Length: 363
Image (cartoon, rainbow, N blue to C red; front, side, top):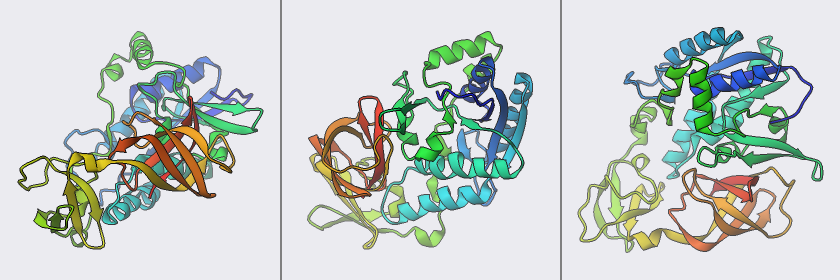
């Protein structure tokens, strides 16, 4: 957590146990806290309210009501910030554009950089709210390094809950005004504190798992963007027909709708030809990849090859690799051992022990 003389902190509230406890811990430290919640659901996409937890969907109404009620219980003011247009442009349109290009994007990474830690704060201040720092429920840590004169993003002490990967595209400016009150705590500690304070219902509440309140992403796309095409083997032979490339990702085995003597997996998605290529599992492994749109954090730029541990998706265990600069915004990543299902469009974060060196998009 940043050490600062500032007293005014805005906390992003979602109606869950983590953001509620973030408010509590900051109040305990003497900060003047206000709660803010972003509203992104605009009803333009038909999503039934099935009780599925997510960032975008009709359940937002209940989440906002709960955030308001929790803010009142905690004795702080609460404000709702309308970010429907910003979310649609920076998250939904980005998500759909990447998928129709045959890539698998990570909407949470983009939402954090452009919406949650960007547009939300800008519009909150434009609405007249005054605060010096912004705090969220994320499990991560931020520290200032006197030697490099840079703000550093670090893993949470609870590595099982660490969310530094999702925050790896935050800029130096954004990190300089951020607090992560939960970064030095564990999830069991958070739940135990919540129960002691009378928030047992929050401690037992199911956590949000996705950015949209449905398992069917196709609701975000226009019909003309979903076209059936050929499923090919590695030699170009047609094995069947796919429903549309948006339904597939690298490494996928289930739901292919074809019969083969041995298990096959999606090894390539060609948006231009509208084809899916499948092959044996060993064809999913690679030792080298290129990364673009680099966001450096602990260093200003990469001037020479550097040994790091690279994480190619949130559930991936980071692996030893050498990153070599191609340009200021591009690098080559060479893994010591081949990694499974490297997926274009996904974010890759680079670590030096528990510190995020930087991150980029797999190209």
